[in-house]
Amino acid sequence: MLNGIIPSSWQPHLHAALRIFSGLLFLEHGTSKLFHWPTSASDQPLSTLMLAAGVLETVGGLLITIGFFTRYVAFVLAGEMAVAYFMAHMPNSIYPLINHGEAAILFCFIFLFFAAAGAGPYSVDQNRNS
Image (cartoon, rainbow, N blue to C red; front, side):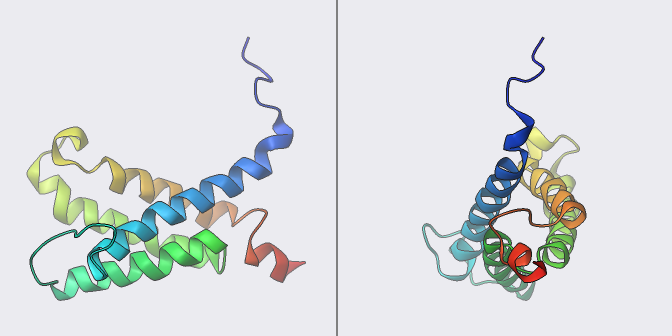
């Protein structure tokens, strides 16, 4: 019944939109850790682990947004999100709604998708491979 509600010809454009918006949202997590912008993730000084996470999220978010080395970057970021979930969220509760780990899980699987599917259109990777 819903077959064809969104034409399959939109697939490449939606692939790119998912990549760009996921990258921008991820970038925001990094900038909040490193630069306290647009808000501060914490008032505490960054631990070495959180500093590393902030760098990965800022640089990785930017690279995902522009689609540069997407498969490699996405694989690393998926790993970061899996580690973040199991270290920071899961010890608080097994339920993601309670432990506030939904974003980590979603980012992990979105980045796994990009590790497998690549950047798609409107990306540096596509232009490099042409």
